[in-house]
Length: 108
Image 1 (cartoon, rainbow, N blue to C red):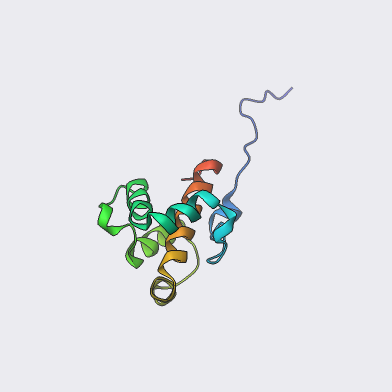
Image 2 (cartoon, helix red, strand yellow):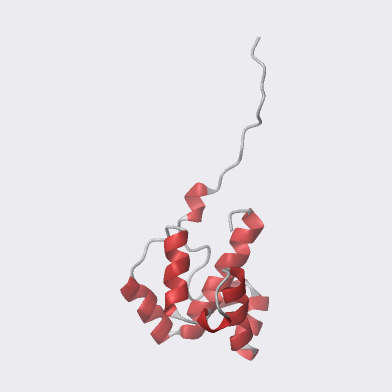
């Protein structure tokens, strides 16, 4: 008779290598949307704090690239730069939403 010593684990690896929400899914998390709208700098500082970085780095495209690389999210420096230049607010909100979702899933 075989003895089970560990329980099967649920993994979210398949979902972890993509953005959890789209760039323009701003209304999928109203708290992040409101924070980004009325206190954009605070949102950037929250992101930097989550990633153990300097508060001034939270709204940079370098932070987006660092995060994307850490979680193996497909993309490129060019795409990170363009999303940050063309719609910085959406880019930063997407990053914060992704952090929040990964925390909920226990993979942050």
